[in-house]
Image (cartoon, rainbow, N blue to C red; front, side, top):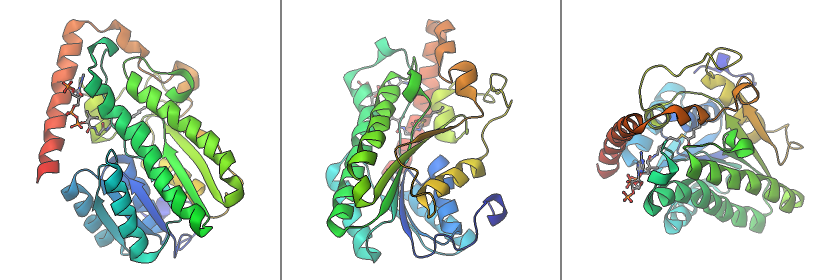
Length: 296
Ligand code: HXC
């Protein structure tokens, strides 16, 4: 990405500090890069230490500035607190948080074990809330203004078959966004969310399109997938100065896919046992690859 991809004046975020969870790859990396390019100090966290560290190095090599990669599993409360202690000690309060870290895979709901539900809900629902709460307590204690942006999906409005733990968890964060937007509005902490449509990334493609191949775009009224700078521009708008009166909103960025098709996985109702067996095998391959990076 270059500054020409962004619609903001250079230096817009100079002196500001942001944390992007799951910032080592995918959408989180793109949003972190945009914040960095506009002058912010950026912290990125993820479960795979080598990935967050390498991304930090690559982004600084490309754009200068300061990116810090921090290993953190947001399912572990003590890891959240230790990381935020380190960030606050490194230069003071954050100006914003992006709840981007997520886990998801397509599965028939009757095939889910309790651990499978927890694997997703403890990242998306519980982990994002605990991260928000720990930051929030610090902001309220200091009287610090801040902006929280959570990455959701359009399924918060209509649910999604075959990704039920994700749909339930993201809907919970949608409720958090609306609730805390009111509760903490008078104390300067605001909450918004983005519901992206298809912005293909490795983690998402492997688990939500496990048959492989290009993500189909024909159901999309704009007949294309999202472009990363489009997402980055929306995230910067919600996190940066000038949009303070925007509070409590979940904004879709999906080319009107949600209105046209419902934007979820209803089409998988046509899958049979063999399709689901193949999907699970393919997802297991990506999980094994990710796990190797976590153990390095
Ligand atoms: C059924 C499955 C499964 C599958 C895993 N499990 N994959 N069950 N079908 N395909 C079960 C396992 O059998 C196990 O239960 C339990 O889930 C935990 O699995 P682990 O592999 O031990 O968990 P872990 O290593 O912690 O991995 C977490 C994960 C993984 C969520 C399962 O996918 C992950 O790390 N994902 C991070 C990246 C990611 O998902 N990105 C995509 C986000 S896309 P048992 O009982 O057998 O022990 C997104 C929305 C996109 O969020 C919206 C687009 C429009």
